[in-house]
Length: 296
Image (cartoon, rainbow, N blue to C red; front, side):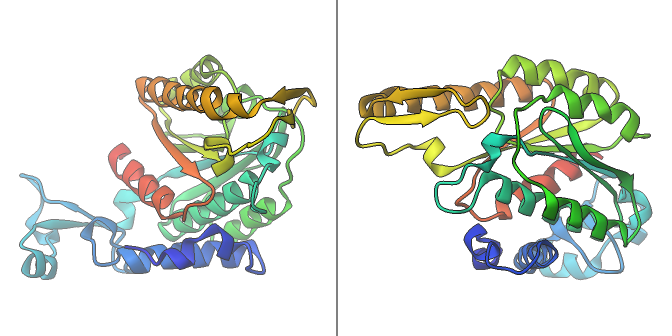
């Protein structure tokens, strides 16, 4: 297991810059995962995969076989590198955080860790910051210095206006020249139909998608003990909410939205991962690596 202290968002928030955050998260995660042949990250090879009939036995790792009694093949960089485009939602609702850490902070940390990990894997990596429009974009390329530009983009990211998922997904047609992976990080406070209609064009281009659904713990389980006036951070609309509504009605609504997201996204052949901003980032990184492995 990864050292969750190194992956705890509250600890990461105290670090001086996002590059240090990315390095801390990835190094902490890999330090906890290095014994698992699923995630091999030495400089000699890119990663392992299980041996299947017909594989060249020259690439069997005999040291792993002697330790685990399992047969794994080394996969080298030329076989495994790919394109990753990361889309980060910078809409106003992403600025919410019940304990200091906002959803956008969490999304920035996750995006930085994915970019750092992807670059370490010699993958071409790109980044899109969006709300109602595309705010900033860098196409997917592989150059060591390119990572610095991506991290600086993330440091500048601020929560702003509304959300339009069509905009970044439609832009992928000109940003991705070949088949690759697309990771969207958002709180997805939109109708599931909008998400599905937006992603179909991208899937039609042959891109593989993973949706990281980032929510604050108080959004998942609110604890209002009295009536409260709540404000929509994107529209400014206000609504009075009773404690009874918070306890009995809202949980079923958010659970239904999450389940609908999971069902509809999975039904379109994409991956879906629900993330709580109070939880360490190892789940997200592990899910990304599994996603990357499955989609090659």
